[in-house]
Length: 78
Image (tube, rainbow, N blue to C red; front, side, top):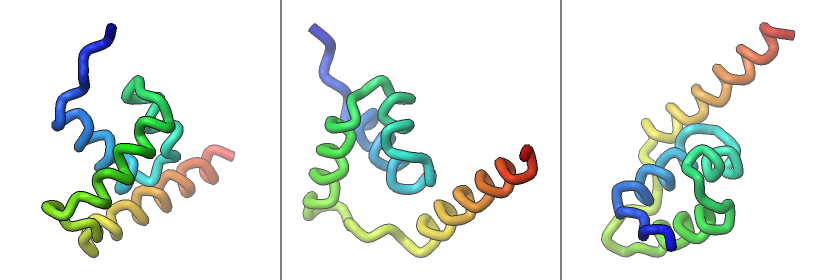
């Protein structure tokens, strides 16, 4: 039986899924967890009243810039 993931592991997976601009399926695969598990963790994180559910403007901007940067790199390769 696999060991239970640590809260830090879960938090990092959720953070990357929400801010990296990468597809959630890729983030789940990178962390070695199922897509449905990551989706459940994200839902639980959003419902957690102790943690703000809205990303800060800075986090949102970083995610958008990373996504744009990735797209520009892909276009440059083509």
